[in-house]
Amino acid sequence: MAAHERPLPWTVPSAPGVIWGRRFGRRARSIVGFMAIAQAEFGRTGHRSTRVIFGGACLAAVSQRVADQTLDVLLSYGVNHLDVASSYGEAEARIRPWLRREPGRFFLATKGDERTKEGAREELHRSLDRMGVDHVDLWQLHALADPIEWDIALSPGGALEAAAEARDAGLIRWIGVTGHGAQIAATHRRSLDRFDFDSVLLPYNYVTMQNSYYAANFDALYRTCSERTVAIQTIKSIARRPWLGRPHTRATWYEPLQEQDDIDLAVWWVLSRPDVFLDSVGDVDLLPKVLDAASRFAGPADDAALTELVNRSAAEPLFV
Image: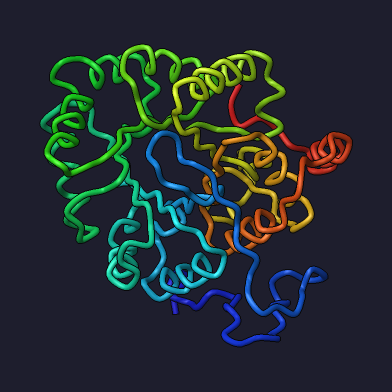
């Protein structure tokens, strides 16, 4: 049996008193149900999203069976916001049965990579067809960081024009922008100057924020978003370092933290910033650990503990 077809090595308790312990080691506990993850207003949309949003990249190469097990875990924690993309392999197709099974439960977001109006229009319709829906709540211009692509997408005849027309036609309700890299906080600030986006998405973790340039631009972006009620989604919360020449043992494109205590610190650090949302990890086997950490969030992680974690794990920035 191929790895992507095997059942996950964790299960969701189906009755009170079940010990959910094989995956979490010493944190195993008797439970009647999982502790629901807290919610917050998702920008100006009027939707109260769980502060951990399901990042659908982890479904890119898994079977439907594994995807459906993943849904059960999300429901156990009360996660009510899905974020996929046309470029995430089979992710859009994998959540199609979820949307039929749980109609109206999720705020649904996807992303498009096309930069021209015509290309973006076609891509959006493919996404709707793959998910089996007639509209999405949020459609995002994906990975918009390259200056030339940025100008094409946000100029007349670009993807943004297609998004605005789709919003007017009722195919999407809100428009966002996402990106990666050391420049992306600054780029998102420029994007918000060009158009009144409803959400942004970018990296945010303790190591990345030690870069003074990135931190200054992130903080400025955060202030702008707070003033304009723009939702802020963050990614790479449990990133440890680039893989470089090391074997890839997880589905994430970076080497992640893997121990529950370490993930706790990283997740709590992100959630300690008010009104910031955390997009979950791109590996289905690590997803329960991120959700478990978020469900137990009670306040900021200790700075000394974070510094010790960085030193002990030999953490490195993903970009410079």
